[in-house]
Structure formats: structure tokens, C-alpha cells
Length: 127
Image (tube, rainbow, N blue to C red):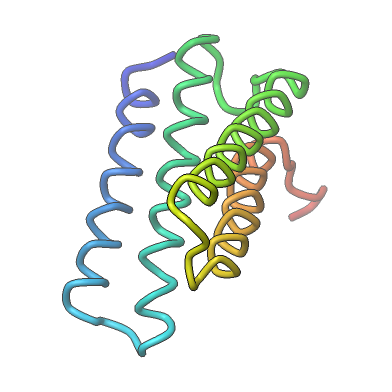
């Protein structure tokens, strides 16, 4: 892997986290978007960091991550994250916003899956 690739896996999430913070602090969007966009930036940042970690460990570009490994990382991350949420649910009691937590897990599952799948997509011929 080239140094620029490794830097990209660090700098892109960093910029996304700063954007999330700025959106949240300065209320740059309407009420609902101001709640959702920082979450989305954070979910993408964490997903890119995970992809970058896998790429650095395997010394391959994102498109070179074997499908089996990508699926294992995505499923493993989601199972561990979901199990942690269930443990916290029982440890700290049922929160009022448990449905939002389930939605957050589903949203993160989609973002993480998308980040690992995106490098495998090839542009259509003639595009």
C-alpha cells in the first residue's frame, strides 16, 4: 500500500468527524437533518476506518479485499456491535429511544456494507 492510501484512510474519517462536529455545534441544517447528518458522517468515518484497517493488515487496496474477508468483517462487526447493544440494554435498563437505537444499528449495517461493497462496483461499459 502506498503512503497516500494509508493517509486517506485516516484523513477522510478525520474530516468526516470534524464535519459532524461542526454540523452539530453550529446547527447548519434543519432540526432533523442536524441530528441525522452528524450520525451519518460518524457512521461513514467508522466504516472507512474499519475498511482501512483491513486493507492495511492485508496490504491490499479496498477492491483487493477478498469477498470472504469483507463479509466476515462486516458480519462480525455487526454481531459484536449488536451484542454489545443488547448487553447494554439489559445492564442499563430499557431506554426511551430503543427504537432509534435499533434504527441506528440498521443504518450502520447499511453504511458499513456499502463502504465494503463500493470498491467492488465497476462502472458500466461506455460510462
